Amino acid sequence: MSRTALATIHLGALRRNLARVRDRARAAKVMAVVKADGYGHGLERVARACADADALGVAALGDGLRLRSAGNRQRIVVLSGPDEPGDLAEFRRLQLDAVIHHESQLAWLAADRDTRPLRVWLKIDTGMHRLGFDAQNIVEIYTKLHALPNIDSDIVLMTHFAASDEFDNGLTAAQIARFNEATVELAGARALANSAGLLGWPTSFDAGAAHANTWVRVGGLLYGLSVVEGKSGADLGFEPAMTLSTRLISVKQVKKGERIGYAATWECPEDMAIGVAAIGYGDGYPRSAQPGTPALVNGTPAAIVGRVSMDLVTIDLRNVPAAQVGDRVILWGRELPVETIAAHAGTISYDLTCGMTRRVLFVEDDR
Ligand SMILES: *Cc1c(COP(=O)(O)O)cnc(C)c1O
Image (cartoon, rainbow, N blue to C red; front, side):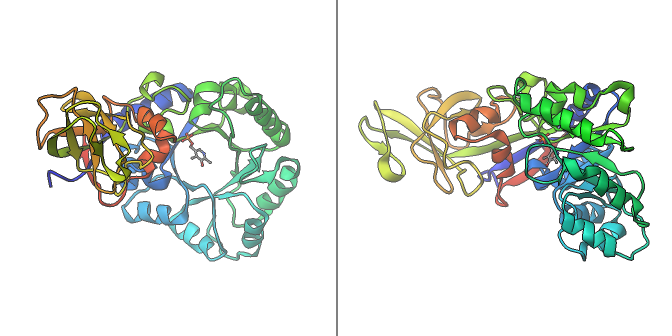
């Protein structure tokens, strides 16, 4: 038990981050995006902490099923919609909203004789070129969709930003303009902004009287994850919702010139103590973390040395002379931003929190 890698999820942080999002979103409604198992924090638990959200956003039908099975009664939007015609009956039975982004889905809907109403979000491609209908054809598609008898007439119009995290990137302004132009004649709520849109592009959700009915779809900030290069979630005024920790299971003196770990890549510059912590890429700690990646041993900064292995990492303990077996090691969390680890591992914070494996023990605290 004591040697297990532990992901502590701070429910209070999730709740406060949601309140911060709502505050910044002004009059817009808030969709809490909980895809990828709540960015690795646990789908059902994040949904419970986000009971105040106006909707939850999931990637796939299966997540909607999990939430309904857990008794969740919030509005749930499946961000990629039905994957096959047979999914439609499940959407209706579970009362899930479907994002419609492709002609094939439109054809399934047109052929569907089920009379239970379905709520849909119409996804428009304004320049990211991933999911969505071409902005040029959107009036025609909206009209077709709206005419179907078993579709709720309140269709939400949505698009997704490709580069909203770069606050001086003209692509986002162009996407907003393209969206507004394509939808000017269409009724219904608007949903454009993600986390970075919420921070940097207020015109995408606070368009004044023109469209009072808007949404923001927020993932990263909810978990206290940064969406801006070079900043941590805390720099942006949000609290990390995950602390990843484990314990030292070995402390040894190693001689100057000896090498540490697989492929003997790291050489001790002097006689020194090396600690071994019970966590590795088998838990989701990134194998790509370079020597020098920080970890906290009993709260004191220390550096990972040598290669990360499946179950273990080796740590330079020169900063922590009193360290001993059983001491707590924090890999990331409130005291050590996950963004710092991501930078040392050549990736982004989302990738790290989403990567926790089933071996990690999840615990909740209310802080
Ligand atoms: C993931 C996702 C979001 C949330 O993005 P963040 O940058 O994490 O806020 C919003 N909308 C869609 C369609 C998404 O796929």
